[in-house]
Amino acid sequence: MNIILVMVITADGKTTKWTESAVHDWSSHEDKKHFQLLKSRHRLIVMGRKTYERIKSEIVLSTDTLRIVMTQRPSDFSRDAVDGQLEFTDEPVATLIKRLEAKGYETMLLVGGSRLNTEFLNNKLINECYLTIEPRFFGSGNNLFANTKANVSLELMELRQLNHQGTLMVHYRLHYDH
Ligand SMILES: NC(=O)c1ccc[n+]([C@@H]2O[C@H](COP(=O)([O-])OP(=O)(O)OC[C@H]3O[C@@H](n4cnc5c(N)ncnc54)[C@H](OP(=O)(O)O)[C@@H]3O)[C@@H](O)[C@H]2O)c1
Image (cartoon, rainbow, N blue to C red; front, side, top):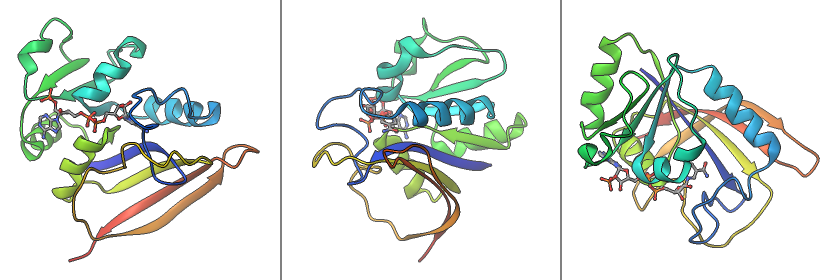
């Protein structure tokens, strides 16, 4: 499975503004367009429960796309679940990936947040990432990953300036060093 992380961050690496959960308040219009385009090109999107709760009112379900929310309490969300479109799971990530591969999925978009990203990073599962870097500093907030130790080199695949303000989109391939 090719696993692609997609996140918008500030130039000081924050994925949230302080303790506020909303991201759309500070990310650029151009990033939103870029994210929409990536989503439209992928059939499998995975996110953490907190991210789901933040964005659930904006999700437009479709029979073309399977969204999976990772939570230790999937039964709490049984009323939200729609078979084949929106599923909740507490499977270990490696088991989840095997099951999805067996169903024919070859690529997964991992869309945060930091805690779930860390789980995937710790298991060396992220192959590529698209980071949109907004030209702002917040000083505090969530980081791309929660507190962990990693040793990953990034190979630049693409770099694009998305607007005049200086929003940058970088696409990297990950190489796990020992
Ligand atoms: N800047 C960006 O691009 C971006 C992208 C996404 C999200 N965000 C922001 O990030 C914040 C949320 O990030 P977060 O790090 O606090 O939370 P998160 O990663 O979205 O969700 C964490 C939750 O996911 C579940 N989870 C994580 N790993 C799991 C595993 N291995 N197995 C089962 N469940 C697992 C747990 O849910 P339970 O507690 O239910 O067990 C955990 O509490 C929000 O404010 C959101 O707006 C920013």
